[in-house]
Length: 222
Length: 329
Figure 1 (cartoon, helix red, strand yellow):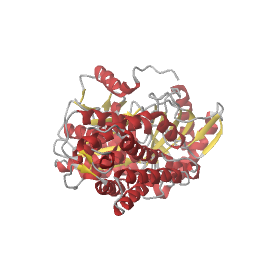
Figure 2 (cartoon, one colour; figure 1 turned 30 degrees about the horizontal axis):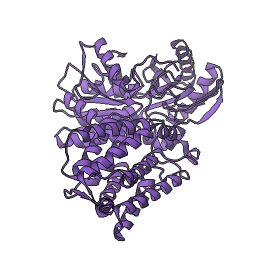
Figure 3 (spheres, chains in turn cyan, brown; figure 1 turned 30 degrees about the vertical axis):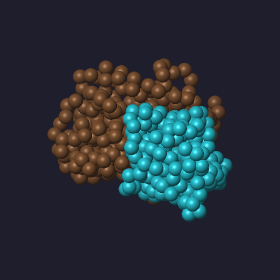
Figure 4 (spheres, one colour; figure 1 turned 135 degrees about the horizontal axis):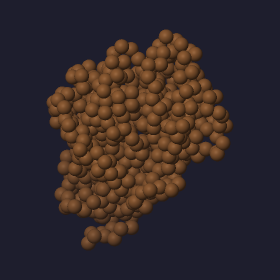
């Protein structure tokens, strides 16, 4: 498989490997996420995300997958069941909601990744009732999804799409510093939350960044 | 902070194991989730409570006769997962439905709501009453947005008694909701608790500082000030509490002085004494008083004052027998 092909379409095994890498990176960032969350939240976000991705890793390694839907569902269920807290449901919904009512597929390209994360975004909005500007993960996810959709419209490669998503998510995290929190424990801080970034949005950024890194750097599985 | 723990990742599991060893005749842990249930399943509406760990004896210590039938236990300061709530509910449901009672925090709401959806698919009927008693967290006209603290005890007491009486799911829900609506608390923080996993304090306060209205996870309160004598502090808290609860002369209340972890019973009784004096002066009838540490945050210093405004219905349920390892009536 040439590099160009690899960066355009991933098979089920590659998608699984990519998310195993994403999990590693999120777990590596546990101290950082804890620090970000401690500033305005209760400091458990890094711990929760790390528990969630450890459980996802175990469950992903338990079997061979035949659809991308099943990979996403397994990650989501692992997170919901192991993490608890608001992040368990919300990040679990991000993965499960992304493939709910999605026709079974075994290839991930720019169009599918845009479709999946667009569904994720909608599912999280329904579940958590948050919108852009509420200082939640939506502030990173919504612009990232916009980026993915733009890339799909322009028929860009998967790598380019993920690069755009990562950039948009990063900007989204920066924007959360300007917002007053409408949800979670930072809500009671009011104006005092301004100047601090949202931990959930930070995790979304790390997820897209790690997806891009894996695609760019991981050795080809030839 | 020094902590008597092993691997921080195992604190919840090991705590539950120890709790079961201490009470193995009455309770059992469910196999694959951090949930405990009363072994003696009665044919009645089931009450399921739960929340993050770290607040012991809530929530697991309130499973028992005339209280909750099961508790879904989350990681430290994190809501229990939907499947934990689901498994606990399935284990205690007798076909008469399950009432969820828990503190009003977004994580708990999300997880219990998701559990309710899963249970509905399995034909188990659920209702929810969130406890929203912390007057410092939102004004009176947004009572439903308030956080839940020690008021959990009042609502569990009333709901448990109503279920024991054989009322229907809707009737138990209605009176539990009334108890939540009539519960008001106001707390003060003196020093932080510690998150066992990270070893970090949940907030920082100078040695001579206190924060009025601070939440039990260190959520910011209303006012930071220097430490003052107990009577002066209690007066400040009661002023705010009575104003925010609309409890007036002629009303009747049950009182709970709840220690947050490291504040001693000696101190709680000093507060209780002053609360009794204030209520007497104001012509508010004191029906019952309790000073204990039911809803803690590890070794957090401070306390809260909770009032349950009573009517005849609530009074009867409040008086009914209740028996769990950490609560008796």
